[in-house]
Amino acid sequence: MMPRVSPLRGLALLCCITLVSCSKSQRITGPVVDAAREGGAARAKAGIDDVPLLGHTFTPGSSNPYFPLVPGTAYHYRGRTKDGIETEVFQVLHQTQVVQGVTTQVIQDDVWLDGVLIEHTLDWFAQDEDGNVWYFGEDVTNTDPVTGVSDHDGSWEAGVAGAEAGIIMLAHPAVGDAYFEENAGAVARDHAAVLALDGKVNTPDGRFRNCLRTENTTPLEPAFLENKFYAAGVGLVMEINVTDKERNELVDVTGPGIGDSSDKKNAADTGNPGVPRRADAE
Image 1 (cartoon, one colour):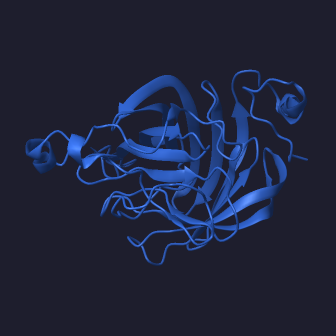
Image 2 (cartoon, rainbow, N blue to C red):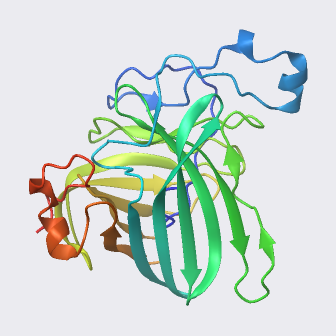
């Protein structure tokens, strides 16, 4: 999932719209699948679909400035919740996974509550030819910090049991755009809408301006409301849980070619396209 600064939940829809552009009037859904190549009635009955998705050419990872995925890079977050202090590491692995015929980039997302691991997740992302970043699912292991009992609630995979890939980041977001991040029925049904492109936030990692701001909701929890802020060249820098009045903030980014804070602030001048740029950090 996106940094667990927020679990993603999206709405399951029929794949009836092929992604062409990102205008205010459009609703983005999963890519179209060729029903004639689904492998027959047996596979359909089993709820499994691993044929390639039509209409798009995918590559693992992402060069989208609002959601860069550079292997070896790790994003560190921290937030205070009603249960205690949550810390998170969202790490882009040197690993890929084929999901529904698409080679995706694997992300390891670990979350601790007061130092105890409570969630271990592997997320799968790929970018299409237009620069949109698609979310193909997650393998989740949740662990109760008190009892140690684990479950896999929240896990889903595009092409399995009717789940569809969602969009985690548009290539050219505009105010008014709306899209589904996860399309997994009663398991995961996140919806996002672009509110602004000039957001400003202060985090332990720096001050950011000209941020993409989204509003995130889910029909699975009608009262839930959050805002996310993405800085170009960095990615997710802050999430505000409006419902519970909590926030999670970017503390640090580490990875290839990234050292201390001063090094990262100057990354935009290094000429290294593999380093997340901080052009909007102050």
